[in-house]
Length: 301
Ligand SMILES: C[S@@+](CC[C@H](N)C(=O)[O-])C[C@H]1O[C@@H](n2cnc3c(N)ncnc32)[C@H](O)[C@@H]1O
Image: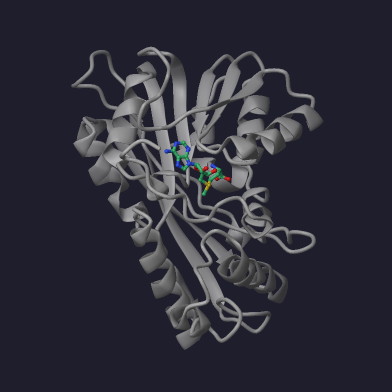
């Protein structure tokens, strides 16, 4: 593992993939879709099970999409997803965002959804994303901001879960409140302010089915995924034996931020789009999100 890498807090337990496989380009990368063109070559970093990657490939039928992952074991599922949709313009590879194995100026769009919050050096990651993006291309990142997650009514169990998650993620070398930091990281990585578009979107879990889906997913993650620590007192205090709540859990909103930056020629002065979003989960059958749960379209994109 490279020195910059953090431990990936979630791992790929079923309770994690329940939410990741719910994701689509429409519900997780809406801020980027208006910029896509059929011929584009796209790199989707930290692609996980590849549902967003497959959607991106379908949106660039004359182009090519590469899904890149640090964890090789999840790529089998990603490949199966793409094959199941009959996509022939997408392939998958193992790699680390801190040191991309591609020449400069290779891709039209370099995208990372819910990845920078988990890496040891997000600024270096953005530098690399920028390096492999063609002049005039787009770097697009979206990440959750756990401190921005809200619910009503107040719940001590939910607050315990929020604080515990933040502690675990930081102990693993990540930054759970990444969303608010994206534009600053982009500046540090060399993107110029006028080339950065920062946006935000919210996932809303309002109905009983949505609340159950999200709550059960996090309950299961809390006890069964890589995020689950040993059976510590801190963990047991997170709403007793389960996670952040059940069907009666409060309505919750998950804030996330994204930004995109335009790439320009040269290694220093260029600006590219950077942006990021939130994380999610499923029930036996993932409930469709009501209109209020869809991420807001990004201004101007
Ligand atoms: C929260 S998941 C997001 C998966 C997918 N983008 C989505 O939104 O459904 C983060 C992914 O980033 C991958 N990852 C973590 N560190 C990485 C790194 N240094 N380079 C590339 N991928 C990484 C993890 O293995 C994991 O699959």
